[in-house]
Length: 169
Image 1 (cartoon, rainbow, N blue to C red):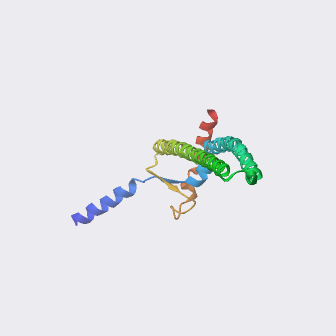
Image 2 (cartoon, rainbow, N blue to C red):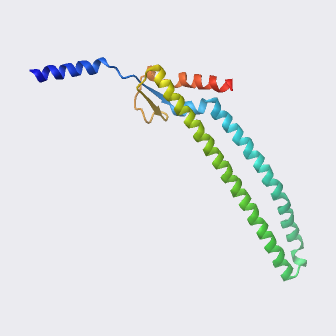
Image 3 (tube, one colour):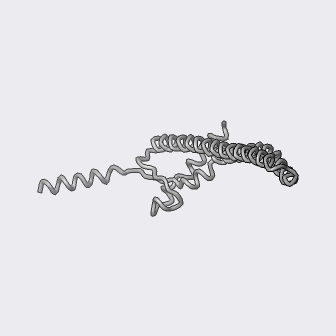
């Protein structure tokens, strides 16, 4: 009898302490967050600038290649091999520059994305504490949370606050 009373009391106690849970559609949040949009614009502009720089290096090389093909018949085998070697070295240099630029852009994108994710994670933690949530789940589309009552979706609320903070800066 004592055990039944203790179990009943434990169930009653557990039902009294409601755990507040919410979820965020991370895909929507990151897509519509103004900081993400600004990051994409900045990276695209940087990519275009780098592409122009690489094109300015590529154009003279292409001229040299065309000149070589136009004059190769008149060259001695030794001169032709010499020019081909120089063109090959220049092509390798240009490929190395392209790879370096690609790596720089990729690294910068990763660093900025990581910083943005940390900022959002930190904000969500503060938001959860201020609103009394014990758990806020993150979803990608609808894959992680199989079902969630729309009343528990705080994506719009968090997105609104984040965008308001971002536009103040």
